[in-house]
Amino acid sequence: MSRVKLTETVFRDAHQSLLATRMRTRDMLPIAEMLDQVGFFSMEVWGGATFDSCIRFLNEDPWERLRALKLAMPNTRLQMLLRGQNLVGYRHYADDVVEKFVERAAVNGVDVFRIFDAVNDIRNMKVAIKTARRMDVHVQGTVCYTISPVHTNELFTKMAVELADLGCDSICIKDMAGLITPHNAYELIRSMKEEIDLPIDLHSHCTSGMAPMSCIFACEAGVDILDTAMSPLGWGSSQPPTESIVASLEGTPYDTGLDLKLLTEIKRYFEKLMEVYAPVFNPISARIDTNVLVYQVPGGMLSNLVSQLIEQKAMNKYDDVLAEIPRVREDLGYPPLVTPTSQIIGSQAVLNVLTGERYKAVPKEVRDYVKGLYGKPPAEIKPKIKAEILEDEEAITDRPADFISPEYEVAKKEAEELGIVKKEEDILTYALYSQVAAKFLRGDAKEEPLRKKKKKNKTAADASDDVMDGKPVAFNIEVDGEAYLVKVAPVGMTIQEAEPKAPVDGVTVPMQGVIIRFLVEEGARVSKGDAVAVLEAMKMENEIYANKSGVVREIYAEVGETISPGDVVMAIE
Ligand code: CO
Image (tube, rainbow, N blue to C red; front, side, top):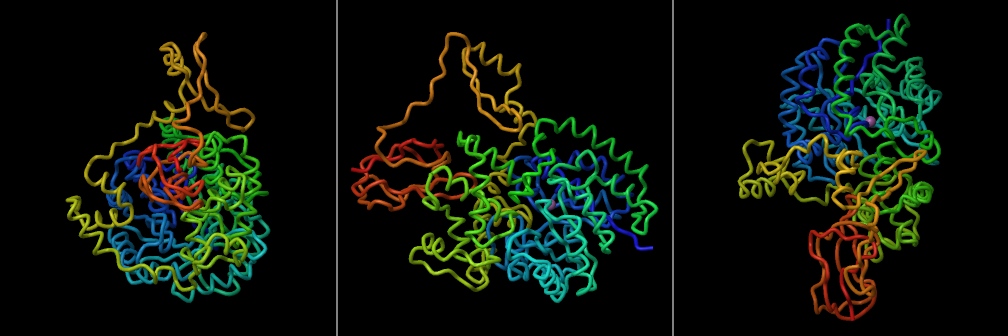
């Protein structure tokens, strides 16, 4: 009897998809022992956004989480999601950092490494795969699934064969946007099974509503492992519910053999836990969203987009941005939409719409992508757009990490000088997330209270207090799935829009963000179109250009200041 195995994602992808990656270790440990008895193929517990979230929002050491879970679950393989040369960060790191990171992750308890690259460029996965193999752990080579004129089952199968040739122990089809249809899940798995003799895992998301059906068709095609999430954290933009999949397969040749009663007991724990996490639970992410079938935008990216547009006070542009995303994706060679390419494509689409001129503003990350620093895009980038973005620069065609000098010793020295190294892993945390890591390792980070978001989207009670105090209050409200920003003020008080900070003629920014540096000083001579400042918006670095030629008369903003669209940052005469 061919048994289908399950990878349980409740400690990683499920809460990343539904709870903004905010689940705390202390809420995992009480149920870990029971989960350990289920008999999953593996539990996905680490990597993806969990590392970032731990140090940025939870004041938790991700390495300690890993060790604690390892102790609590000695019978279950612990799995992590690793973004190839990006590890768990947002840029490519040098080979020595990749090697050290994979080594330490294995030593601290990761048994299964699921390794992917956002543009399916195997050169970005090789060092991680090689190191994981050396550490004698299970290496799952990953194919990012997407739909485009260049992505065919033949191409995906060819990639799976190459990953098998590199010595991977299993292959994962990573359908991060929930785009795979039941029929194509069947076809693709059959195609891979004909070429390689490795277990195949289907990882999908319920975003479009098709994933549970695709799981069943995958079984018919001989899939070996399915990714599921305990039902209170299943559905929506998360994985199909574990209990439902177990029940569906019971008594069939694909029976998982897992105990539904035990799972139901475990489920009760997560039901209660969801009440605790209600403040960070976004109902939009729990919904089936068939838009994804048309726009091919993953659920996480959609909710990101909504919050970016609300921040930019441009929610009325939502439909325009959604329509722009596939165009940008086509221009840039059809990358799969997954971290970090989803941010790259999403931010460029937002900028194209907000500035009213396509590729007028191009973030550094987009330029780097076009330059080839993220690897080889699946299709050619449109030559005209490439030339426009790169100007005189040449794109690279070699493996991007070949251009990155060793970083580990540099990070080690810096971190030691800062006095923040207590263990070897701290150096890696610092190498990946320098500023955020330094703050965390110094002990200056604070756990974000779980009520925070409620405060931001104020409760009626909080808000009425503010209104009583005579302050206007802003609400994000949702009507028929559209978010609107409304302001409420006490009777007799008018709501005033913020005054512009300076005379209107000057260098303005197209979007809200934080000034991270100025590239010129007062008195400098600049030409129209010169980059004069760098604004961080939507996790991207955006250059701000001189509006005319002349001398920088005055700079009105400071580094670290938050700037809104239309604010004048400097005057040029
Ligand atoms: Co996923």
